[in-house]
Image 1 (tube, rainbow, N blue to C red):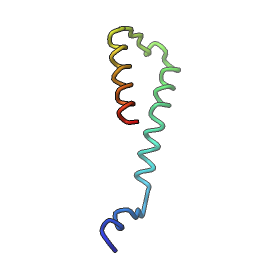
Image 2 (cartoon, rainbow, N blue to C red):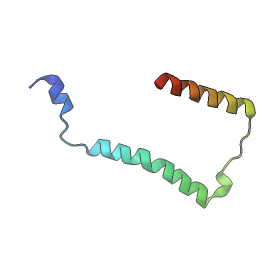
Image 3 (cartoon, rainbow, N blue to C red):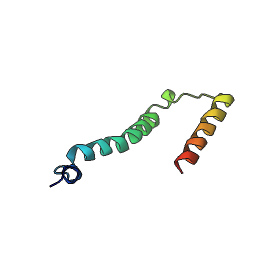
Image 4 (cartoon, one colour):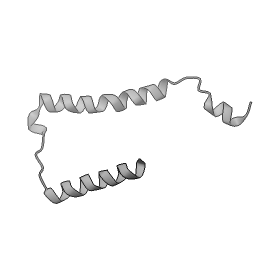
Length: 65
């Protein structure tokens, strides 16, 4: 058996599934926290920062596409 084939075969996907579960549950936990404690939701409005964040996100998406 070649090394590459051995690397592609996974015996137990438990840790990987756990990490995916955590990555999917974390935003839901944040939403639950904000629903339970709305005073923790910070209102931040800064138009130049919003422009640059949206522009950088668009450029990253164009590069990835």
